[in-house]
Image (cartoon, rainbow, N blue to C red; front, top):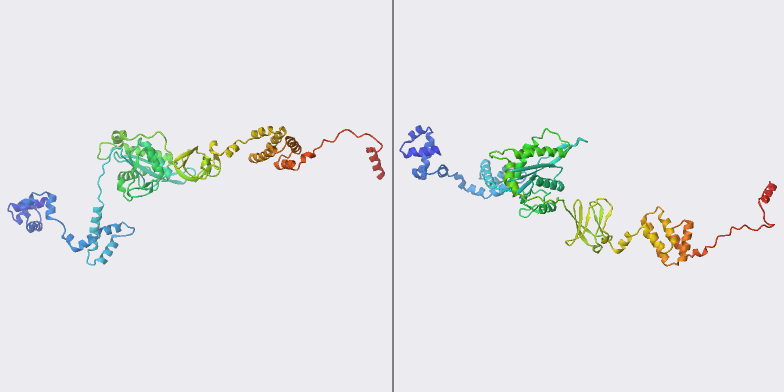
Length: 515
């Protein structure tokens, strides 16, 4: 444009074309083209010389007349369709052009079609620079590439995921390796990041990863319950990036690239034998990034963060966050629910038998709710097949069963008969499960209440003599009235001597005769 203005100035001063060519050292064809364009446009030289370079260029070179042709209007109406199709898998610009030429045989050539399509795509993909407020957002993401360490016992290479986060206002950087992108590891990394930053921002901006977002939506994404609990615990809101819009979290996308250059590349020749050693090395790299002076800025990330952002962060709650798990169970007839993860039983007040309850449990606590009201709370016990109960939760007959013991039955027996106490004492010395002994003793007590004391004593005496303490034996003695058959033991007084008494001498004599 500078040369064009000089051509116009010399032409205004009355110089001819040959003189202008010699003075400016440019071709005659160029001078002729500029002056012909001015003449054809009917513009005044004073008006053109008063314009700035961009305005003068737009006046003289307003664009290609081809854009006004009918075939361009035909293509223009379909450019949005072609741009959308180009994003589909395996669709190429060549294929779209062939389909275009089938519909418009006299349309643009492949190169012109591609030019107009790419121009349209570029105008659609314009971006803007976002201004961030201090302590407003924490952006998080996982790097696409994995890192690893070596198992010292097996020599196996264990791959890890790299969690990356940043505060976009100060570009303060955080990264750590976790075993997987699963919920527990994701929450652990996020809690560690908050502890590293030392405060809480107003917003958390994650990607639409399945770990964080249960159901993606452009306007109202549904959060994972654990992430929602975490947000409520720390007091921040979650604003996921739009699906397929990485520019919504462009700051952390840039820090993923920084992680590749400053962590992956720096540690490429080092070998680690645990994830703790790997994270220690990553921490050193993160510290170096945060303390290094940024390009074109007179401060480092850490200096900017400590000066402008750290004082504005909300404080971290003193109570440690624990992941909550949610389940629904029906209370069994024994007034317990079975937590399937641990195969452990927990008691519920007996009035809720048969009701559906909501169970919320963490690594240390099990809470049971019915219609929004907490009805039971237990310390978590991972012992399978065991029962954790509160006595008051059980029905009266269950509470009575809990009172059963060896001493209980001895006390009950003494109130009836001392001999019955002796029978029970012998009964409990047998190697039989307590539950079976309790049922047997209950049978003895029930039968004794219907029988007179003398008969009970005789039956107990017989049981002690023969060593049979089963309920069935005792029942037979009572029902068959076998206790009446007991008589006094025979006298031990020797018989009187008389002539018919034969001693051993007699039998020895008979033996000798027979021999």
